[in-house]
Image (cartoon, rainbow, N blue to C red; front, side, top):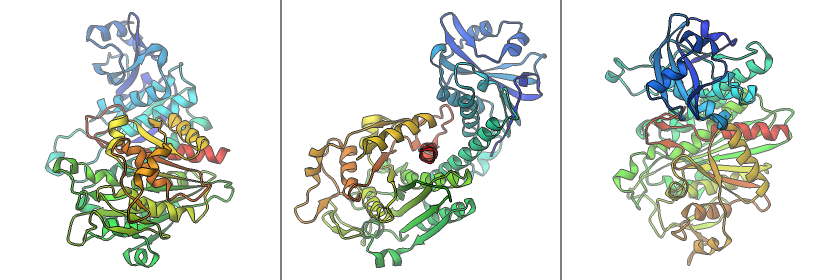
Amino acid sequence: MTSLSLAGPDVAAAKTDVLVVGAAKGPKGPVLAAGNAAVDKAFGGRLGRTLGDVGFVGNEDECVRLPAPGDLGASSVVVVGLGDAGNVTAETLRRAAGAGVRAAAGVRRAATTLALHTGVDAGAALRAVAEGALLGAYDFTRFRNASLTGRKGPVQSMVVATNDPKGRAATNAAKRAETVAAATALTRDLVNTPPGDLHPADLADVARTEATKAGCTVDVMDEKALRKGGYGGILGVGQGSANPPRLVRIGYTHPKAKRTIALVGKGVTFDSGGISIKPSASMEAMKSDMAGAASVVAALTAIARLGVKVNVTGWVPTAENMPSGAAIRPGDVLTMYKGKRVEVLNTDAEGRLILGDAITRAGEEKPDMIVDVATLTGAQIVALGMRTSGLMSNDDDLRSRIAAAAEVAGEQLWPMPLPGELRKSIDSDVADIVNTGDRYGGMLVAGVFLREFVPEGMPWAHLDIAGPAFNTNDAWGYTPKGGTGVPVRTFLQLAEDEAAR
């Protein structure tokens, strides 16, 4: 991973390959961000005009690379757009740092003055820029061979300028950014791994290895233990595959903790749709159907490494949804953990089945809240697009706290309702409930289904990350193509917020 260090505000004079600076969109052209007087001076006071001459406006995610004058320590300067000058936020800086680092790919050392921007709280700016730079430097090359030749790798060393580089707040922000980036990279790596190389047992092994290294306890239930325990949802989804399912429990405790969070993540390592098979084009990204599970595993590692004063349990139900002579059929009835019976009308609505078992099991430990996360429905993408997750909850206060955590973390989500009238649509003629309902509002129907497995009176929230978990378009900001790492940062921020309550 790219190394991170801090330096004083005079970083422009330091020897480096690339200097990343920001410029906003002003009424008369690009406006250079604060902290770049020395850079502008090296350009003869004409950097803003030069940017305008090459067509740079200052829009977000806009980048231009210029050769640096001899007065600067850098060989070249990357200027990244910050959008409207009056609307720059911490997330603006986070994305700009990521875009700048991506534009600098192929160099050994880069530095940035973005955290010196005066329109954002200094601490928030430093945290955002450090995170964005490291997140933007991500690269997944495990399965490359010949194509590695001539490929520009990520920046090896990143220097972030700040006014107090040796202060405790700054060093803590840098440490947190490194931890966040490592956890996000773990999630991205898992999501990007081909499904033939990441079966349920493999995902469980990674969870055991990574969480144990971070100081967590890990217990894994194999198919025999699942059968003995009556986990019909997990077993049903996995029974069509040659690769049996697993249920992983990750535990982190802090001696001074007063709150306990249960995180539950969907871990379908490949989703063919089962007997209700998907069109081939809809399967191309289905290696990402375990993104919720990956984010739970990674969030636990970050929370543990930072020693957050909260107890967290992570639950990872993982299975492979495949069609075969042994697969569940439309019309089959599964007996879920603790006895609820579900008629399966669509085997491609499988994520809610494994989550139902895990949510019920998580509730037995009586946490203060349960939060589940899943690439659950195509309806989420229809409703909110590829960048905004859907948030549903049975508790208004919890919904607000998660939304606030996401805003600070820089991950987009939007609160959605759980309409009572949709409950009737999951009534079954032969069992307790069916796994599909009203074709309209499919994201909400899935939430209504999951609510059936939440213990009475337990605050619960559900995040549908179907679009945001996997970027099928070009890279932008600090977000690469492929696995994104959503919502690791939100989970970490939520844990920190709960610890502070």
